[in-house]
Image (cartoon, rainbow, N blue to C red; front, side, top):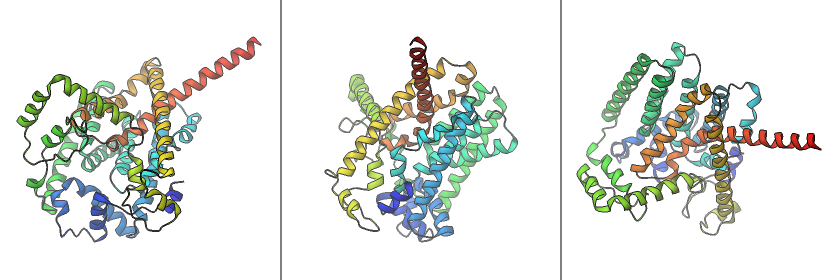
Length: 392
């Protein structure tokens, strides 16, 4: 289905995607200094450079790699569910449960770090949740922890969550300390290498405080509002919080959290179809329809369907969380690392500026809980049905 989608809707990259893709296919030549100004784009650009150098410079190459990453994600959702619920082959239907999630298909056109990052973090979670750790398993875990952080610094939440898992569940403080030391050492080294190789101009980077002040803007309740500035400081942010007052801050937090976790599509329409200025490798009746952003039947229908899907999965996920809480203590303790991640992302984006795209990597975790809820619902329905048959 994903292959059909990228054939029918051959979207050309735009915005930051266009910049990093052009740099990658030109052999990492960056005459305008884009990477030195936006060093957070260096890892994904290097990834695109590698795969296009090996497999060809056509835009379809990274899109096919997105599909490969989606398969990896699906596989590890299945394997993690096996581990968490002590299942064997009887939980294969989780693949059919997760695969129809529409934002995943639309994200195939998104030449950026989200799909790759999600594949890496799901692989990492599987490595962590395995009952027995070999030396190789531990090394792979450390390597992936570093890579996922380098690709998206929000990956520090995964490092913290995994450290908590080692200390609180596995009771192995020594491995936890070594894991943190190795991860942070290599993260620092890679950062320094990037700075030198790409002549990173740190004076042009926005400070942390610019993102935090944007996270409490009233007009867009934490969404990007164009107020980024190199001049924001911690004192400015504290003053902004004081000026807003407790009531307004809590209101903004409530609005931004409600929107971010209930938006439901991860903005897949924008990243899968582009905007009204979108360009396509080939034109057809469907791509022509997609250019009419406000009135396209395809856009409107798919957005509603994606939201409906998301709400159903979320309701089932809530049931799944209750099921796990009331289940075996071992299962509950083992899956706690998933809750650490959800809580970590939830708290981080209370403060930070938001986009629903930023929590795309949480969708496989939601699916794991949702399938647990689905199994429980099916079990209850079957139990009631058998009871009625027995009564009759």
